[in-house]
Length: 156
Image (cartoon, rainbow, N blue to C red; front, side, top):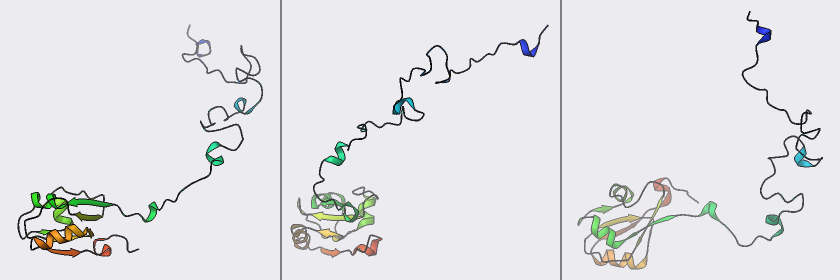
């Protein structure tokens, strides 16, 4: 006859460490120390040096990092403007984005003077090199410097 108290369990019970059994009182954790305690075995990081001052703190820091206020510029050369735009076009952030010369991740655009420009363009950007300004004006175009706050950039 089938009795519920006579059934054998389908799943074996997990062996709990430190509760006796074949491995003795330490259950394979050795004697004392941080790794023998609960939570100490896997929580030691790879840079843990046993309590002494870590190497990363012993070595002096050098240099200066001002990434919080850094401006990243996307660089566009005159040859790119020559290839992508027609005469009398306005070159600004939106038109550069529509022509896939820039993506929306970066805010600032700088025009550099590499290449030749023969078309009359109105170029609006955040920064220009001197040679780019000269080449655009020589081709009959105009240069307009955009202020940061006009396009949603920082005002610092």
